[in-house]
Image (cartoon, rainbow, N blue to C red; front, side):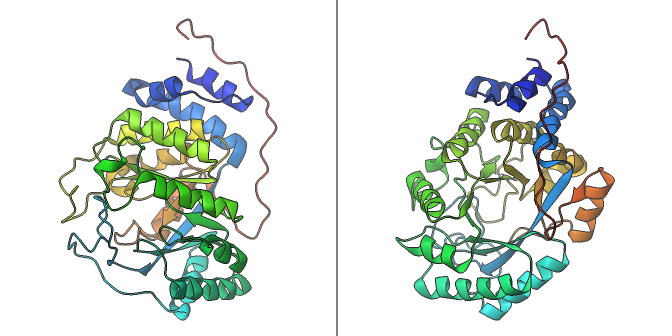
Length: 344
């Protein structure tokens, strides 16, 4: 396949199909740089060379009743993590201040739970109103499965985006969770969008699924029309059912990121948890496909730190997106002639 031709088609409004997406993740290793170059053409068209930086706040830790096999915050597994109830309004606002000072444009409050109580919703909403008055931050919340009416309350309070990952393909999902099903997650994403919030929804690669599952997950997210796609790479945690799962290769993680970019050309594709562990020294290459990233860690695991992340962004020739300036406008679609590939 000619990867340049694939990028040309996407930039002209075409959509990558399942067969093409599978070809990306199953491509020969020696084609990685060609794939990333094609993905970068799409990324640059819609996002320039900016990187949107996001910061997570672990607002309620280690006491989730669900049994997601990858998660150290499940109370069923006894993983060595901090355990505490819902943080106060003051703690959530202080987290926003720190996120702003780190250069974040999005601040996401996350709770370990099946779904939020009315009291927790009220705490988050009060914090959101204060944060919005003080800082030019976009607010994302990740509070689990939403009950009827809760999405509307969050949207009214000023929450911009709701995170609820599908985590895996519909086919593979029963292998990682038995306490709720895939449809519960889909319905929460739909209710968030119906209420007027953007949807942040992605998954985790490397839990024992196939590359076909990666493609099916990416296509399911496209069908849901989510605005933000976090791509996590499993960093197996102690005492979880997946603690002995072997990490995927860095090169496969990069191919997957490129595939997600081709499937979601204009969306916020984020390199998320596990990037330091799985990608290692190849981390900067992720920015050729992904236009956003988390900094300052991933709830229960540390990252390489905000200063190192900013250094990496700049040394790779990118620049942090500044929240105070207007959103980047896509450049006009001016295609260069693609190379002729006799095997295409």
